[in-house]
Length: 144
Image (cartoon, rainbow, N blue to C red; front, side, top):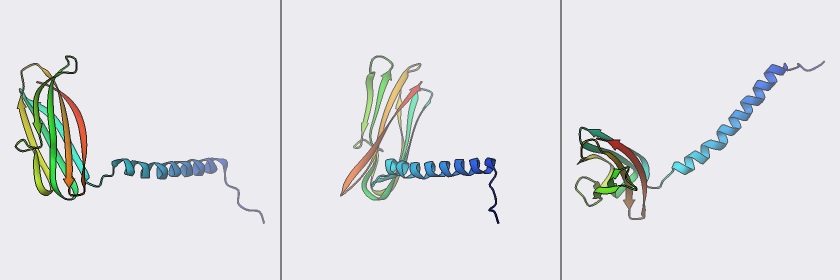
């Protein structure tokens, strides 16, 4: 009694499916490691304009209760001249940038720019507790 033969077409599909599954399984742990943080569970940064106002929305979700979290800095440069002229700086000590003893924090910080100008906005968010801290930085470009 002979075994049942597998058609060549089905064999190729099974091999391709197996290869895809192996590649998928190998890439998932790598992505999880590069995104993992002991302090930051998730975050969002959005920069947009409303007339001459530059609005910086940020949100930070911590992995636990942090002693301080929010935005450590928002730097606005007039762009594109060279590296840009720094026109505004907010730090974690500026009003509305951080919150103490919290799991999450979000806010919108505004700056009034000049009409018909281009700006580069560099935003750094962070989460800090007694054992350490972590941060993420993004750069956005907007026009008024």
